Length: 586
Image 1 (tube, one colour):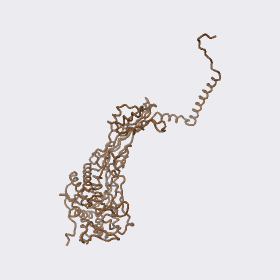
Image 2: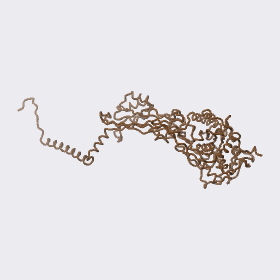
Image 3: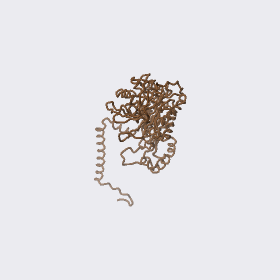
């Protein structure tokens, strides 16, 4: 008999105990069977399971390499890397995604709406929910402001951001994308050399992402990239860009290009393409401005091409220097009428007069003596129809139809630079060949590299080939000097210096149908001093309202040449004699 108020304990029914024991036995059996199956089918030696567990605890983190600099020929920086931070989020640890987005947006200069997706932990997203980029390549001061907020779930990684302190040669140097890869110009062409080799940090962490004491911790340091030393002269590049922009504005042109080369080495001292863009904000620039039109765009050169016609005729001996042609102002060829730039009665002209006065009809008469095969051969020898090999992405080889496809007018029009297309760099290399005594030198932009250990390795010299004899080059130089002294290039004259060069005015073909528009490309390409050339300068304006190369481009050449003389310390040199011309012949 139980006492009043005592607790009475009742034994559960036997069938309940039996059911519980049976359930526990089944669960234990299932666990044992599962373990046996896993060990037999998935990891007979246990290594797969250990690897699986290891992968859950150990997180590799890439350590970016420091990108090499791009320098001018004097060691002045054109592109450098600055210390920065990448900001990331672990959405699992972000306590207030909306509030965090608002606070970050105020510091990072963006909108909270753009940041919010990186801060939200989406349970339906099968991807990695432990890491999301918030901002890349943030300057250190801004990153420190974010760090001071102490926002849960926000982390930082060391990084760098590309900067272009000089702000010049944008189309040559190029730029780097968000992931640190070169996208254009030298940054793209030499990306592997500049980028170096990334390192890696392997850290063992707990589920909360905290390092495990005495756990795995391995660091493989990154290898910095090498510096690229270019042939560009930063001061001359800046002056060329300024002069080009002023000429574009003064002539109401669509754009312009200036190339400055050393003819003996092929070194490009300046390659200005205007209008230009800010490489630090390349994503805001018109893609057409980012293109290096000095190597990617081919144009019909016009009368600057007459230097090839004259060189070929002299080299082949088909035109004595004192031979006089009677040159009308128009000629009928293959059902088409070809004109000189200005009407004139039939005139007596030597080949020097034809070059100096830029007579299309005279060039046609000279080309007739050469013939198609020899003309085609010299166009190829001077480098037309294939890229120069300067090492810039997207370089065009121009367009020269195979001789078997030439029409009845091809020989005539190519003699004065129509019916074929070349890049500005190809054309500059033609004049550099004459300035270098008839030897073509491949244009180059790289002077050498500086390795991570500071060792400078010079680039190999440019390959060369002889195109015409030294005698031919000397005679053509005299013709080009005569063209500046007493021909169409008088606005390129520089007191105290003898300039050798040639004007060009080419009508632009229609883009959507055969024939030519009323728009023009004006050019002047020359070198100085004529007797021992130190620089070749190509000045080209696209669609100037002033039309003619002698009016629009020659003054641009003169402006750049004047600066080059002062900056490079070029001495005047002795003058070269004028070639035989009609006014002095009996």
